[in-house]
Length: 291
Image (cartoon, rainbow, N blue to C red):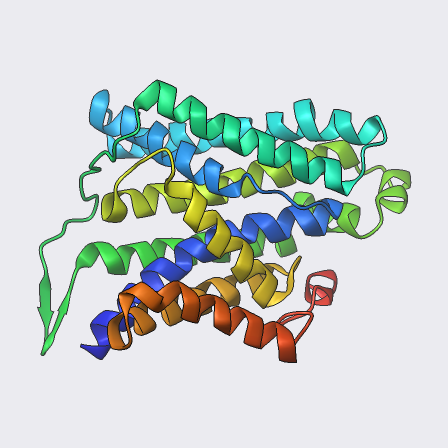
């Protein structure tokens, strides 16, 4: 029973972590806060649903097209909305309001396009339980955890081992100095939003077979992902991963052993407890600077 609950917590936690990564990447790159990550997750799930279920495209094609589409959406968000607002002298609060407005727009767009009901997304990896000793494991849950962790590892390697990732980190630390060195700062900022959208879309694709697809699916996930980013250390990529996993485990174990009705109370009480003793989160953002 414990192993099954643990896997369930990790399954939920890695999705929170993917969303939290987007929050942290954007804040680290530009010092801005966004509230549209959950809606990128929702769009990714709906695009995948349309391609895989409605149009019957192969899974590989579905994933590639979905990630490319959300990459473009994230990039356009920065180039069309965020960038122009900053050039006009808008402050961080205006960016927050803009992303909140975009969030409501995307939710209503989804409801007008696909409807308000919850759509069933077929299991990608199979839902036939496997007996491992005395433990019953659903392959889909295991694969969700494995794929999400691989995505986090790939992002880590991209940010620390590639020239483009190094340029993005340099631009996030000092835009003026990065520009003097020949780094295209606007490009790196656009790529940050695009990568954040892709991370959220991956979470949407992984979560869709478990909870279905709906226009409001990103709202709760976005809130938990944001809280996970704060707990981990807002702006810290690795802290976001830890915070996401922690939130998923706390929510799942509290739901099982205490009460499913009070899981959110317990989860956010844990958030307050962490912030009371660790105001800057579990990890500090300087870790990215040293990576």
